[in-house]
Image (cartoon, rainbow, N blue to C red; front, side, top):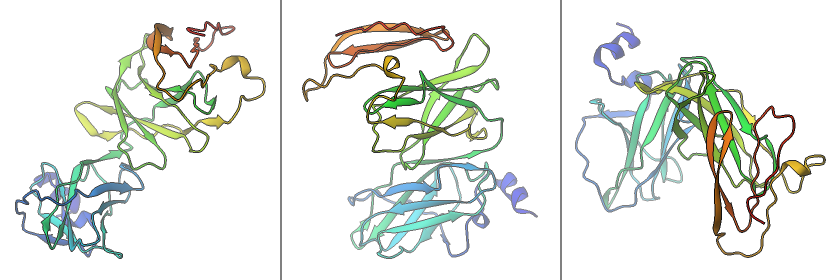
Length: 292
């Protein structure tokens, strides 16, 4: 019987999806300990193309003697690993990512003081099942440091939700339910910011269906925001001005709804910022400062 047939019959992860060297033991209830919870992340990402490899990392303390990882809702045994040098983390490689290895994972570690608390959940999503969505920046992908931008992810596939990922981060991806645009596309708007020139701002998005949230589309084309320290030449009139008067938290002085491509975007103007907006395709942008 082949591996995929075995997985489909039992509906759980086979140890053959993991690389040799992992120890598989009987599944026992682990009591939550008083040790700090470990960190868990996936490399190269938690969004993995079907049949591609992925590694789950678990990091605890330097006194960790053993690490365990579990998939939520699975009746499969624990997978255990000894820590790598310097002794505070372990890795759990998965050779082939499939819909059966997708899911929510947690990890624990054992030290002389007992077992740690469980990590925060790590959700592994398998991708490559549907056509890629599109991703764009509103009003544009060129902006000054400290500014804000809205990322639009959409598709004609009728996805019920979209997932946005940022390159180089272990933090969980951002998931939003979709809204139907008047064109018939399903779309989601992700507000991002403030952005700074000291970091790289590279994004990808995916489309998924609500009844199978851990199997998603191919990735969109990569979108990279160009963040400058000062106003790009020729674009001065397109960028909201930012006035840094004090170090105190800015007070919201006015709110306004912006109609954009049939969407209503709620905007807030503070004492420190003038916000403007316009619809893509307009002959010329209209600039209306909401506060001075």
